[in-house]
Length: 441
Image 1 (cartoon, rainbow, N blue to C red):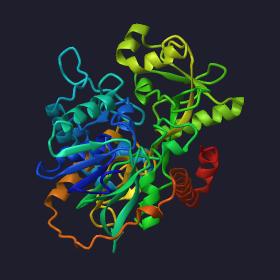
Image 2: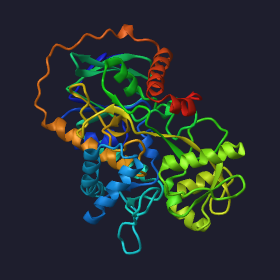
Image 3: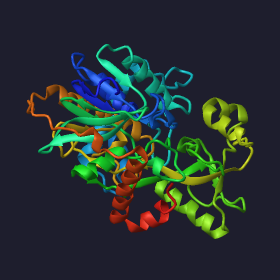
Image 4: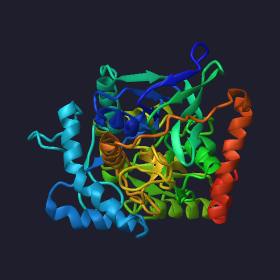
């Protein structure tokens, strides 16, 4: 930003995960799009998604899929959002395949659908155990070739530029600490969740909920900020840093959970929050900080082929998941709440949109059903892009003045943002805060 403190473009997308990338690809080619990302392009949580992406296989499965999603979400889901997501899934998957995304197939060349916790049917497509990486890498490769899409890395959004509840752009800071202004017609927030604020999280540490803090500062509506999913099975380690996720798809393929006595203690295919609570009870019962997972129904060779990433990560820690009891512990994983949107990604501020994990359109309710996250990101980011493409609203040219010298240093800003978010979680649900947030970084 040192040589150009003001940049003008048509649309700014904050975040380079699946939601941000698919938004960019679905926008008209005559729109000039700038995508900024806090770290490098591949350092987004979408790359880490292991299990898969759900799809409505046939009309007969609609009611079952709908009920599975609602039940997992404790029936607090927005039913319209759930309906839109499920009905849109075949077209979205078809688009991914047309773009070159490869999903695993069986010996007959048909999709190899798998099942995860709280699903009553096999309806999840996967690419080994790196589905998110396959989708994100494919979308990124295409987006980088589009002349109308520009990527800027190592750049952090530090403020939203607004006047009279109309968004005019963002303020950002680059890796050298230089700040600048991006002026545009529309902003799409795709910054992910808040895992970087927790001690145990499957998220990258720089995913710290910046969009949520700025929403609180600017009076943008948030929803269900205390609805934060704790994943039951992250690989236990005393090392610092991001926790490695052992996907629910492993349990879908027959893995079992054992306590300190080697006893199976729960139905592993219940919703994630139910399994997490069962694990917490066992840890409290035995005074431990982990339980164990093992996959006895597969040989090492089969597990290495089906779950190469997970198998290797466990082996690096000295465990063969098909023979050994691998220690696992719950860790923060996903934000069901966030910036409140409608089914088209519109926020309470004009010309400001939110998609992916950053957004809350109510599709997940209180607890996300496994492998609905990638699908949600794809479905609603496309809807946001489609709405922006049709929008003919003309904003005032009276752009608010931004005093770049008024912004605090990075460490002070990060402390303020974190405090804003944690206070909101505590305000919404002190019990959850006391249990999961009091040991945040």
